[in-house]
Length: 332
Image 1 (cartoon, rainbow, N blue to C red):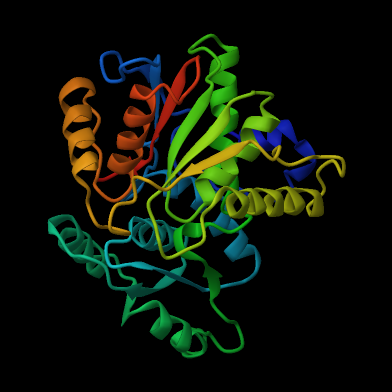
Image 2 (image 1 turned 45 degrees about the horizontal axis):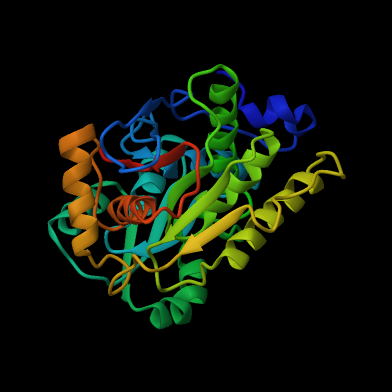
């Protein structure tokens, strides 16, 4: 198993931060000609990442979270998400392979064909599902969920929505370090922006931290697609700094600095009516990406993120220089 780039960058972390390889790296980069009006647009395509029953950027987080759960002696992972949670499905399928059970607390959001299919996959995954309908009921049920899924005195290992904990963000650090190596190898020019959807903040936070570690000047443009969490640039930057503190606490250079204050910019204008509620702009971007570039997007995250990128590009708001879109959708 090849070691993660983070361990190569900070070898002192190899023993204190266990890693479990779940996919083939690095993920590819390629030009997307004819999609943007002004920018030189590229994609870093995470859709094929993952050797198990689900793919995409969620698998990157599990590469750090699953071995930590085992290190702590946990037998069950407890996590939360919406009815169509990609995160919950990825956690359920990969945790089972790692010998861990999974319980998922689910809250309601609009149901379409994709969500119905995702619910079928969740039911077939072996995870225990708790339909709690609202965030308030989920919070009130939390003590019962921990007791319900304890094994003796061993409580389940809790993972927040999207796996966006300081440890989970290291999955996106790895993506950014890969991008840095691909720039150094001449596979693409150094981007001005790296654009991603922001559903729980972990990917954007980890990208900002990883880009700094890679020595790139690239900034993260996060397109907020979730109105149930605080996801402004300050909140996402705070998560990146907590990940930096985690690295230092596990033995990294105490002088390791986190992202600069301007490393992350978030935009909310493409959210529409709320989380998991499609937008006309997103649907146009989804169709355009499929027709012109062969990218398969979905309506909750990646279509909205690409819609924002294309609109900002057309308005001349992405400055000069190449732009990379992070394709995080990984259906199987």
